Image 1 (cartoon, rainbow, N blue to C red):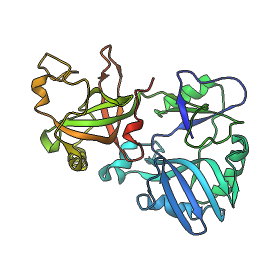
Image 2: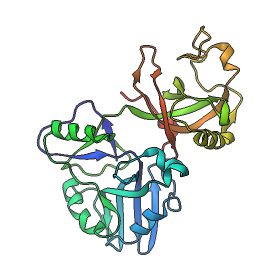
Image 3: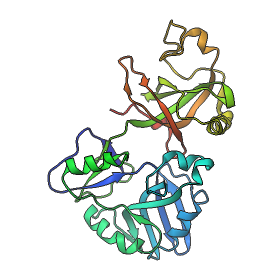
Image 4: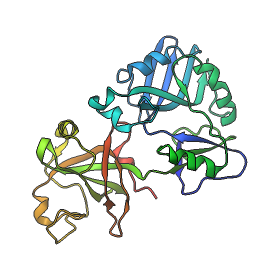
Length: 308
């Protein structure tokens, strides 16, 4: 179940609020001593996060399915999406799992139950396991938003307490307010440079067409540039996947790409997804001051749209 983007959180009774964590959405599936960690696009992450796997084995249930987020946190408890991606950042962070929903428990399907009931049964399942509980936030909407923004966290999720779990649906019963402008984009190419790459060219799907959103040059260290260029190597392609490039007649390295600059680019099959932070969309529909956060293995490129 996924949340819809909103610009304003509901304030009427019947809603609960949680931190929007900056990590990988995943399901923990426990069947006796057997544990699986499944991404939102059903990739097996079990071997990738051994500390989460070990904690899941200690869940107080014979069988269970727990929904939540894999997050890398520093010593102060602040999450870092980049630390999930790169080993050099990983050393200073601890990978944990924040649980926020319980879908199955000891053979009982809970998805048709209201959220409040599912949540009420969750603390006893995760108690002393090492799986962390995503607590409900208390206070008015204004107080919650101010507190989350003050901590530098990504946003707030609002959920209706009476909502069932609609698997695979982006439901208005769950709403997300992003305090930090970022979203996923499809990587359609890059300009080669020092340490492998200089900038990524990213876009989003509009129907079946991949549209250009902008260039991403910030957010890289030399190590990350080498790591990302190596991960993109299997997807090299000879043709530009963007339907609206070239889109500029000027030769400076700005928001557009000229016909001459097209020859500088290494194009890619549009299957890789990147998380990008940016200041705003320009009037031309391009990203302003975009910064790379990491590649996402848990999102399908065909599902990437411009978020509004």
